[in-house]
Structure formats: structure tokens, C-alpha cells
Amino acid sequence: MPVHNVIFIKRDNIVTKFFSKTLSLEFATILLSFYFALIFNFPFLHETYLDLVKLDNFDLAYFISLPLFLTSVFIVLFSLLPKRVIYKTVLMILIFLSAIFCYASSSYGIIFDYGMVENMAETSTSEAFTYLNSSAILFVTLLIITPLAILFKINPKQNTFKVSVNKRLKLISPTLAIFFIIVFSLYSSYASVNRNNRELVKYIVPIPTLISSYKYVNRNYFYEPTVFKLLDETPTLKTLNNKDKNVIVMIVGETARAKNFSLNGYPKQTNEYTEKLNIQSFQQMYSCGTATAVSVPCMFSLLNKEQFNKRSASSQQNLLDIVELAGVDVLWIDNNEGCKGVCKRVKTINIDKNKSNPLCDGDYCFDEILLTQLDNKLANLSHQTTLIVLHLMGSHGPTYYRRYPHKFATFLPDCQQSDIQNCTSEQLVNTYDNTIHYSDYVIAEVVNKLTSFTNENAQTVNAEMIYVSDHGESLGEHGLYLHGLPYAIAPSEQTHIPMLFWSNNITSNMNTDCALESANTSFNHDNMFHSMLGLLNVESSTYQTKFDIFNSCNLNTLDIAKNLLPINESNKKENDVILK
Image (cartoon, rainbow, N blue to C red; front, side):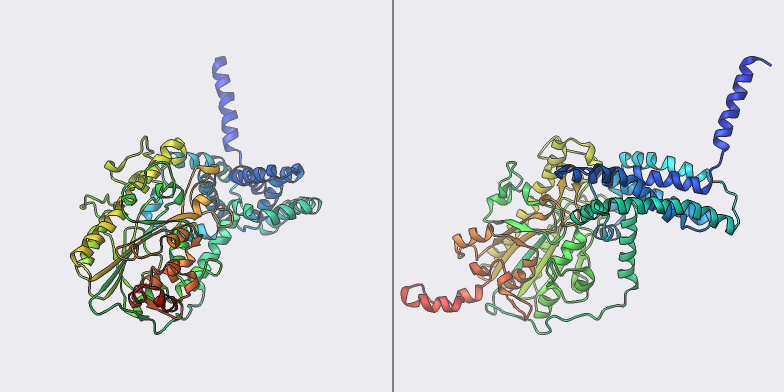
């Protein structure tokens, strides 16, 4: 036989032997546990390292022990899984999920806590697919190859129950010994880091996410239904007179951050359209949450940020329920992914995203489409007081480039892709600024339509527009992208939001100094419930004057203002009494 054939046969035997060799379940468990600890949890280790570096005394022993500590936890957990079929099925699911979580944390800085799980559960299919791109597919594929290979090389031979238990115990016993040695020898370090950096634990993949998922499912599908609570059974609507109509358009923005508004001092002219109008920008406004699933229900709820939880909020009247009961005609027009339960008891129009409309692509529509619905409503006012809520798609990422028509690509070069972490900072910020610029155009068009409408109905219509975003957005600052971080550690880019106000009749009468002072006072979504009741002139037992943003400037006291006596020294005291 030729020598080269002998060489090939030997090589073939080596390769065949390598790929045909199986692994014991116990050895595979050790390998997979190390992989979960070192690879899937690299974002956690990285964040821990960065936090420790900030400390005066870097605890090297603690940091070195972390991978071993995590590995021991995974070994114990994986060893508790019963039959091999269940073991392989569960591990396969965990591998895929962990790869996705690792990609999201590494690329965007996302933490999969309860709030993020809630946000994911309420995300539509079209929105979920915006995160699917070549970078994500390649990253996840590379991450799962090795653990899946280990999983499929596990010896399919099933041991007897007794043998299997003995082998598992032999693996778990020394693992637990290592676990307790680490805990007791470094207890002060682990306790200190955990106490001072509680949010770090949420970076661990996949245990905290699975716990949060369990909590979400349990709270939303297995809790006993709660009795709906009426906060105010008899709210009343104050009217100016029988002829006047009061129209308020509330625009709920999406993912807009105050930092990028030129009205707030941003150097790029992102508010080109509204700055020409008599609009007041409230520069110190903050959100209730860092995701739509929390912020939108929270801003319409009587519950404040500290008290808020979605289950309680959905089980009682919100702002829309109370003002409608008082006699306000309420209409919610949605161009986003729904109102998160806020509008379920009032009239709602969900924009049809059919491609037949030139403003839509089948998945999303540009926010201009809301203007047609606004025109229709203004042409058919049936009540004395009307509240129209426009829910924008705004600056929803990561596909920012799909939020504005091509003609609004003002700031270039922009980022025409969803894997935004691979764009330059200039491209990413330009794309985001284009979304703010386009939203500004839509806001200005709403004001222009209200102005035209009130001019056509002189002396009979009072009109206001209030715009407030649900939360902000990170654009690569501190290595973070998008939003949804736990509020306690979220940067100001995700919580500092814009708020704009316009009126066709109050602005000229308001105290300028007071308005400027209010515009620079710190407010948050907790103020919205009471401020909207004030603007709508609804008397309710739920209303608290101290939380009404506009109360101190008499912006919401049209009826009172009309009762004031002519201004002179003799009437000054009486006017003061009326205002109080």
C-alpha cells in the first residue's frame, strides 16, 4: 500500500475517533457551566470589573473568584435536571436565550430585568424584527456553536436511576464545597459588592431573566383578577359658557430626549418648526420609567412613580376614564404599538399600516398620518370639551431611519441600518436628530391646524397643545444604546424628556416671569395627571393643586380669569382672593 494512503487512513481514523467520541453527561455539565460563566456572562464580568475599578481598593480575589462561583452555581442547577432528554431540551433553550441576552447586553447595554421582560412581552412582531440584522445573526450563531456541539456529543446511553444519582452526587458534592469555600472566605467582599451594586446581578445570564419571566407570567396570568376601583364617581366639568368649546391635543412622544431639542439649547436646529411658534419648552421634565410599557400607563395614572405598578394602575380609573366620566369627549389616535391599556375604555383609532397608504410601509407609518385623523375630529366636535391624544411613533429605535421621510434627512450622514452600534457616533446621532426634527414638524402642524381652526371659529374655541415624551434614549453614551435600563442606574439620556406647551389664548395672559420659572422647575410624569385635569377644567376629588404644573401661572383658570374685576388698586385684593 502506498505510504500516502497509510497517512490518509491514519488521519481519517484520528478525525473519526475525535468526532465519534462522546462525553459523559457530568463532564458535559462542567464544560457547559464554564461556558455559561465565562462567555454568556462576559457582559456581567465586564460590568463588575468596571465597577470594581471605580473603587479605591480593587478586590482582585473577589473578581478572580466570580467565574468559579458562577460555574459552581450552573453545575448545581444543571445537575438537578432529570432525564437526558429533558436535560438536553432545557439546555438547548437556555443556550439560545443566553446567546440572545449576551448579544443585547454586549451591543446595547440592555439589562433583562422585570421591566424589560414586560417590555418584550408587549412588543409587536414588526418591532421585534427591527432588532434582527446580520450582526445579531452572526453574533448569536458564533456563540451557540460550541455549547450545542458539547450538548450533542453527550453519550445517549441512559444510566440506571441509581447510577445516575450517584454520578450527579459525586459532581455536586465537590462543587458545593467550592461554592461554600468561596462564599465564606470572601463573604465580606460579596456582601459589600452586592449591597452597593444591586443592579449588577441583573446582568447575569440567564437566571435573573428567567425569574423575572416567571414573575411576569404569574402576575399577569395566574393572579386573581382584581376589582376595578373607581377613584372618583362624580367628577364634573367646569364650562366657560354655552358657546365656547375647549379643545386640547395631547401628543405622547416616543423615545425623545430633552438633550437633543434645540429649544433646550441643543446646537443643531432640531426644532426648526416649533421655534417659530409661541411654544413654551419645559426644560426640566423627567419620565416615570425608561420604557413605554411603564411610562405611558404611569403618566396617565394617579399613582406616582414610587407607588406605580402596572397591575394596580390597570385596576383603577386613569386620567382618561375620569375626564370622560366628567363629560369630556376623549379620542386616542395611535400610530405606535398600542396605548398599553390606557385607552381601553375610551374611543380609540389605531392607524392602519397598510402599504396602500404612501405614508406607510406595511410595518410602520410616518407620524404625518395622524394629521388626517386630527382634521376629521376637529371637523366633527360633538362636545363642549374635547381631548385628543396623538400617540407618535416618534424616535423609536433601533431603526431610526424608518421614522422620517427621505426629504427630512436633514442631518447627514445618517445611519441606515438597525445594528446601530456599528454606525459611527456622528451617523447615529444624525439619524436620531432627523427623527426629532420630523416630530417637530408634526407638532408644529398640529399647532397650525389648531390655530386655523380657532381662527375660523373666532371667540368660540379655546385650544391647547401639550407634548410630552414617554422616555428618552441612549445613543452610545457610556457604551449604552436604546432604553429600558432599571431607573436607579439609567443615565439622564433615558429619563430627561422634553415637554412643550402651546395655547391660543392663555399664553398672552400668563405671567411671563412665572412661566419662565415653571419652565425651569423640575417636573415629572407624576404631574401630568393633575395638570391635564386642570387644563381640561375638570373638578375631581383626585386632583391636587400642588402637582398641577400650570396652576401657579393661572394657565388652567380660564373661567376664573374671566371673573376677575378690572385691574386697579381697589380691586387688586378682591382679584387676589378670586385667584386663591
